[in-house]
Amino acid sequence: MILGVVWYVLVGVLIAGYALLDGFDLGVGILYPFIARSDNERAALRTSIGPVWDGNEVWLLTAGGALFAAFPAVYATVFSGFYLAMMLVLFCLIFRAVSLEYGGKSGRSRGWDLAFFLGSAVAALLLGVALGNIVRGIPIGANGEFSGHFFDLLNPLTLVIGLTGLAMIVVHGASWVCLKTEGALRKRAAAARSGAHWVFLLLVVVATLSAALIVPSQARTVVTNPVGWVAILVLVIGLVAARFAMVRQRDGLAFIGSAFGILGLVGIAAVGNYPALVPALDTPERSLTIANSHSSHLTLLAMLIITCIALPLVLGYTALVYRAFWGKVRA
Image (cartoon, rainbow, N blue to C red; front, side, top):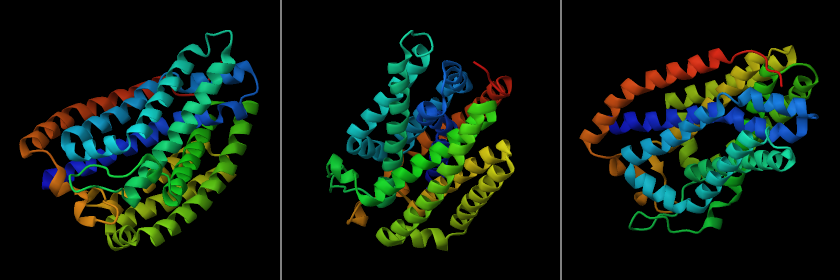
């Protein structure tokens, strides 16, 4: 059971890492048609994420692989229940990748630009909706399989959480653009960042109230758990720091603030669900928890040893890449 808890935390860390790193990539794609006014500015946006976007997406693959190995029953239920949504996310990420690789090299870049925007926006929204369903719970049959339909996943709470995630991604992406660009492009990104941040604040309040009304058990778990208060504090610090930094034009602090906001939201969701990975809607006894869905002790132990060796190498390499390509970009 202890190893199961460790892997619950590790899967959460991988998901948070993906949201934190690929989040600004998606945000840049969403902002792309609105803040770039020339070919040079569009090229600058692509260049700002060019060296890192593919490495950032690996965190999503790693989270999926960790879920498959550590909690195979959860992997089977989630990926069968969210199959259509996950395939849409996959196609969105493929279109994003192709548009980034070929958009700048094609003489007809408008179509690639549209693919970059739609791939980023739809993927960000669907991933937020998926998280919303994990918070709300999904219908699970007696055999442990998803027993609903695709449109069951689209309900008021999950859509609000999806829009909250979308606004969060826009803020994070705009913060990255402000860090990496200058001049008129940076000014437009700063204006988008400020507006999106107000929308994000409003949606955080709406999502919090909605979750407290619709899934009160998760809300009680968060406020009665010390770790939940830590996650809330991280979120509040991120929101306040980001707004303060925007007013003072401190782009580095604004980016850190948006990162704290992401970590806080993921932490709140993880604490609220604990010990369930996938709550069962209306039938709590069918929920997939750490206790009833983890792999064998030997599997979890072997994976933990490998992770302890590989994760520091991955983090070190990631830090090296960001250090090598740090600073302002130009087309």
